[in-house]
Length: 323
Image (cartoon, rainbow, N blue to C red):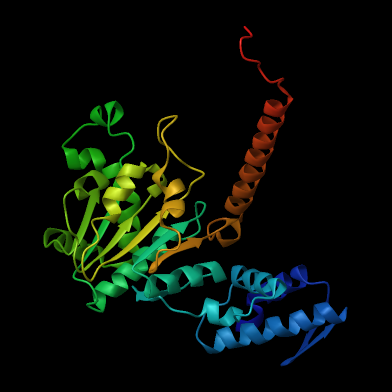
């Protein structure tokens, strides 16, 4: 009961905050009273918490809130099935999806050769892809992992950084190293890189190669041009899998340059064995404020776009010959 309700009834307080129902605990018995629709949801919530607990998942306030949200959304998938699906067990902990969209994304990687994951910051796009890559390597499904991302400022500003070329591009690749360190023994990473089992390189280094028996992740793909995206996707070799991640709302390309990630779905939509996974602010697994920040920016951008259209419509049409 302590594990179910949390130390100091921490989880019970979350449940009471999420639902318009009164919850009373006496011994091993829980009584719920209130509107029938709410009491039914609370009963389902406790069923899911007990099942998650039985399967070995750690219960937390965040998990309770996510289960409650899934129950209110009336998904056909059980919340316990989402939160207890293990992707990779590493360094004493298990990496699991935390939302239904994350589960669908992880499942899509298993089922398709090329998967695009598009969503805002903090939704686990790169982290889950990395976990799948490490798992595939451990299971000997692939011979190597290739991690790449575009170095957007590959001109003047990059040139002013000190050191060799690899030292210059290291800041751009650091997020990939950080995720890798969470899943692989840090002491073994230099050996794996030296042996070519793990390769971390800027996107420009992919040109002219054919990548066989590899799990390839392209991160920050919103900063590719359409030409770069085509170049990268055509590197696919036999026995390989590609995951492309990015956030189309955070494009750092020069003004007027089209993002390859923004147009790729229009180009490849409908091709078998290619899947597009969409993540939203509801899938953010960082601090709660991150999701709210994402929503606020989306609302701001929508209003700005509507204002722009309104101003364009209010301008009188220009006639030929007028000055």
